[in-house]
Length: 465
Image 1 (cartoon, rainbow, N blue to C red):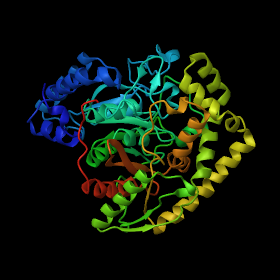
Image 2: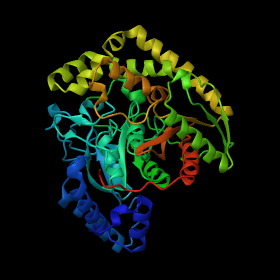
Image 3: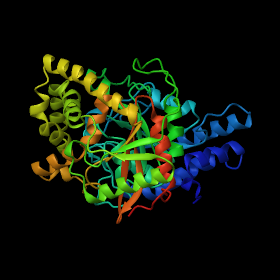
Image 4: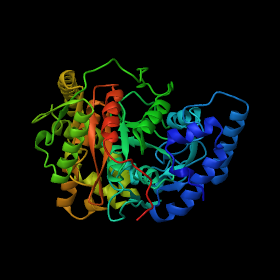
């Protein structure tokens, strides 16, 4: 089997452009790796080898005709099963949607294809994408390639597991409360939640989303290098008129001071010692690269933002969500909804108005803070990656999981970009940190991420444990 699957996305497309490798060779290497390791981790749950090779042959033909090549030309990537891909079921991990065949592509799929990427397959998610664990009754459970006893994260657990195991060079994920950032963290990778409006998204196969998810859900890339995250963002952020939230903001903003705020325990978060060590290590890596990093005791509110985010996400249309989950009878989805039933059912019209008004106040507070500290360094999670399915153990475990994820949940309400950066391992368990910057300043997150990355060991594909 070829070792081309070990390449980064940037390396793979550079070799393809130079004529050193064909797209068919890259595609076949990815398919061979998928066949070798996917049975043990169940990351990619829908793929058609003939379609992948046909895409590759088209890319090779385009190169032979000297046609312009996209920034991901020849690169095998995956997309999540909760976005439309023409001819495939948009299942979102739900048996109720197993026959919901998309007639057209989501903008994320179209933009990846326009960038020259080869869509290798579709990755697993928990039912309805509700959890930080990835299992469902349609596609089964996804395993963490580093340790099957740990969650691969969720809801983009299949995406992260596929990248970590070397099945694909780059993966698409979605993030409404941490669903890109947490799988990247759990699988020892980098993952970017872009600014609301940066990446166009739309699923014609599904009803229009409620206002809460419209304001908080985004698509973003998961990869093994920060350079690949940048390539993925550039590809995904192309214009598409189907998304009314899309903004034509430049990918590179004006120069900003290399100043960051380090916060270990935002809003009193019970940050584990291992996570604190990773944060302090990341801060030192930044300082070694010329950053000024000031430790601060607290940040503008995140805990309040997290509560409002949950209300808008799960409360806006809760009765319909609950009815679908009861019909699906998925334990994880039912637990997620039951755990927030009291909070979600409080979302009447005055509560929606309050949440949206308060959102503006909280975002203003963050924007003013980011004037002095253009980058914020804080935990992804208060804990190391959880034991798989910890949220189903008992009520206390469920509460523990959601409490630990407060920083991930709060940021989507604000629409700010956030980047998970892998910093290595605590023992044999992956660990990392989170970077936040102002709206449409993903470039600042990525600049800090590159400097943290450069001070550690490269993230390499792993053979599943």
